[in-house]
View 1 (tube, rainbow, N blue to C red):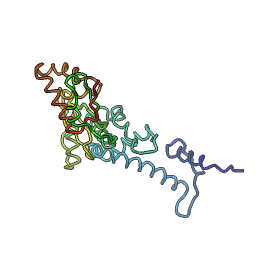
View 2 (view 1 turned 30 degrees about the vertical axis):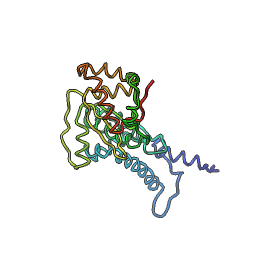
View 3 (view 1 turned 45 degrees about the vertical axis):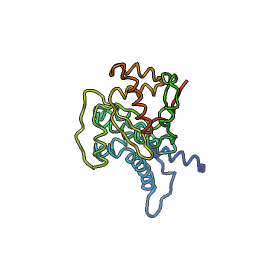
Amino acid sequence: MTTQKSLAELQNALQDFLLDKRQDASDLTLETPAFSRKERLHIYHQAYRLRLLDALRNDYPALEAFIGEDNFVVLTNDFIAANPSQHPSLRWLGEKLPQFIREHSTWNSQVAAIELAEFEWAQVMAFDAADIQCATLSDARALAPEQWMNMGIQFHPSVQSLNFYTNAPQVWNKLIKDNEVITAELYPHANTWLVWRDELQVVYRPLEKPEAWALNAFAHQQKFADICAGLCEWYPETQVPMQAAQYLQHWLNAGLVIAILSD
């Protein structure tokens, strides 16, 4: 006597088959005049992976163009096998792909591919970040003079700074906007790039070392006085307050700041 499976049992069994946790799933479907059980299950098995592949292609179009379609398919199949989707939304499927490439025996030496993946995921995160009203210059000007030295700022959740040893942003720009592959260059020192969302558009730009340091210091809850002290490494002490204020003004105008914090 055959015991009929419940819907939950059938769903779990099919999931195990799709994730290669079981090889024999012939009891999950019926044969038809057009397709055998094996053929029907193969369609489900392939369709599942093709859907995941499409999601990764959507998040990493430049990476695929850079390493080639065949390499991308092999890489993402390895990734899917090692990192099965754990979230109801495919939006999070590719989150761990950059780190996976860093640790992959074939790709871990391909710095340009790694950083291109990191750059593309940063854009995904920036685009999907919460929509929060930004602070303005008026908020900064409303501070009393004695409040400035203890002032902190809170950045928009889309704001990210990334350190690249290659020209990954330029490679991405050429691939996406001009459909052109340019040579990936490897630099002896990392360059910092800022990524954020301006209205509905993801934007990015390089940062000079002083600005990158100041932005990172503010992001780690340091105060205006701390930033001024740190900027003395690059600027004369008399110029530092004005330089720090200029950074703040620029960030406010660009929509990077959501709050001016004062004690």
